[in-house]
Image (cartoon, rainbow, N blue to C red; front, side):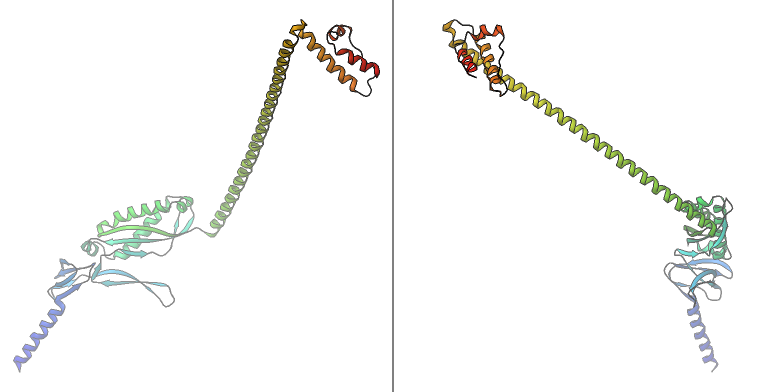
Length: 329
């Protein structure tokens, strides 16, 4: 009977030893083991064996966010033995900060960090989530306090970079790597926001008027340019028309002159046997044509012929018929 009890106790001890001695660590997690209260080793993912009773995992404070019954997020701080090595996001509540120009502004931020040294995260800081939150709030106040409100509203990237650099340097001794810091909301007081909206509205109206004036100016400039081009084209057209008319008249006169020269040539050849002057003959022809025009008028009853023209007309035998026609009238 006593041997059975002893064997049962030994079997129970082995079972308890096996249960307590085997530690399964998930991927992207780790565990810090202490032996008799002193750091022993860090467990990696997979199955690990420890000595029960003398080896114990060291607990670390961690923060979880749960959604409450009313839909609001509830922050829970609890002690855990497994340390998450993945990137963690902390959404800090809104806080009031004062800018360089003494404007109280409500700002909240999101912090992305990752534990890269579990031993430092366990032994260098007592409450890591609370320390990160307080450090972020203090750093945010310092950075915003060096900037005016306008700079705060327009320089988010600069603020994020400064916060990340300061926090990453400060948390390095805790075994933490700060990857990103993002400002979510920057809410100035209501009176400041109303003034900013009025200023923005006035700026938009001013910009709209400037654009409208520039458009009108451009339109008038284009219209003036169009009128100028039209007038130039019209003047150029009239110039070309006058040139063409002058060229046409010159061509006509040239043709007439060529015809008269040909006629004189033929007349000269025809009267060469009579030994008469062809020039007198042509002048007489001109006189005859003029007299015909004068006679053809209805109101012309009297014709005056210059005395010197009679000598020219007498060289043409047909001039007698013209005078006979005049006498009949």
